[in-house]
Image 1 (cartoon, rainbow, N blue to C red):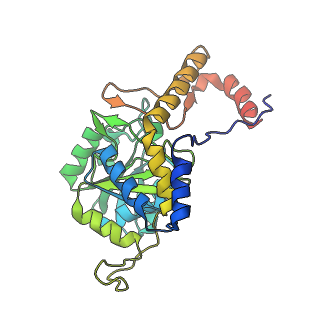
Image 2: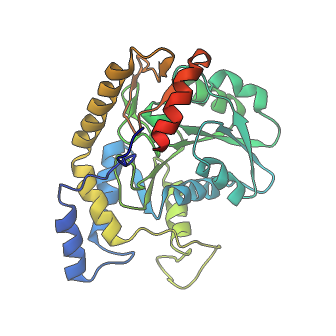
Length: 307
């Protein structure tokens, strides 16, 4: 029985995080304006090879803003995967929409594209794709279905910072991509989110909505209902420093995941998430499945993990 507490993930802050945060404190730019927000957005859009990046307060807010900008209305349906964090579905309900769940395929554990069309109805407006545990979903097949039925595609890339599908970064494949910078993510700001898109109109709408719908020309003239979904300059300072060392972070997690795989490969019933030939995955978390005939291993493992 294990006795030492082992956290799921400890954020690594050995770059310029402290330097940039102290710069914020000394400059007094600690709220929702400041140079680090602009720099972080600029660096992140370059990282994703997208035309626009919009920093916001968290990954759930990023999803909500994306759906609002895409015009989701009460009663509309959005197809989402069954295997994901609840925020993916919650964002749909915030708009009055209905999440319609699609099961996963067994190798990558991502949304199964072959099941999507059977769930499309007259109320379906879009698809939210999650790149589960850092492995890209099969975007060509998903985008093909979306195009044929006139649906938008939002990528929930909260778990896949730096992953690639056929040479293109996740988040930059659909209409809008959203990211989370929660403490356990590959890039963290403590709490935070980012939205990327190539569509200028969508980008402008999301910038408006995240900032209480304050307009550039008349700051206190609000043309629509807005939200306080802004990122702070302090959070952006941490994020910029994190992004500077993202390749090191990705490699470190990959090394640990491969060690786990080699160490556990001999255990009967262990099933690992595969890596497709068209994917360059990253490791958000190392996850495994125990097959039905590994019940005894499961029964021993659960109390051990609970400590």
